[in-house]
Length: 361
Image 1 (cartoon, rainbow, N blue to C red):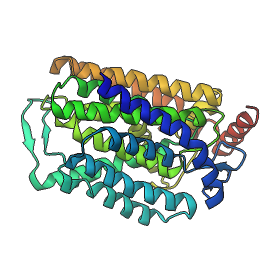
Image 2: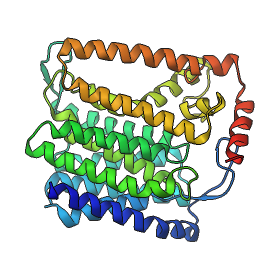
Image 3: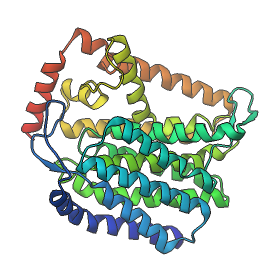
């Protein structure tokens, strides 16, 4: 147990101590977030907070764990994504440049043995070995999770708390494997969670610093890579679904954004204020209540993901069906798919409501 406590405690303390220093650095180098019509905050805020999370995670791991090729790959890709985030937080990068950088960071893990090698058919349990196709699948998965966490970072503590819950869920699931790979991923997930927890002291509402693209992209990258290293390595019939359930909120938020923009004939990459957190606040929840409500949903999905690894295939299929029905009905009612947003509150009035609520807190 001491092998888990020491690195986690070290990561927590480093993150807690470094965040105020990173906050000062953000102001000095111009890594600041100005309020605009799409954002909830009403004053200039420092970003770059993810640098503290990355340094806490990396230092704690390097000081307490023996280096192997997969750990080197994880940290190498993490460094690349953090450097990309710093450039974006300070200068602003075109979308194409960001995507190219994300592809490079995701591809960096491949030579170190981090790759989706097979996909288990959830119907019959047979394994489909991907061979060379495992490379694009791995890159696509890591980029998808990276951007999903990046896009959900719209309220104080939202992306950090979501990633914290996801990391704990991964640790619980990989702990069951009781082998070298499972224990390694369990420890890394717990250290990541501890690094986030130290930062959340300054990031939860009212935030003193934001994760920035540096942090949201790193958290997405780390979670996506850890899923490949651990959760996706199991040969159970449901293993291909479990990582998607763990990261259900950010992944579904992206999916629903694509659907509603397609329905309204808008460009898929055009930003809007109809994400889950926007809709909940527009429906009357406060900033803090919205974040806590999404935390609760994350916890439900986390417990569901854990249960999926314990149930038979037929039981797991039933649970997935129930989750899917509840998610689709709820999403449609609150408007993240687009129904309420089109027939009810206009985007301009939603923006005004959000800003009024924020200014009162």
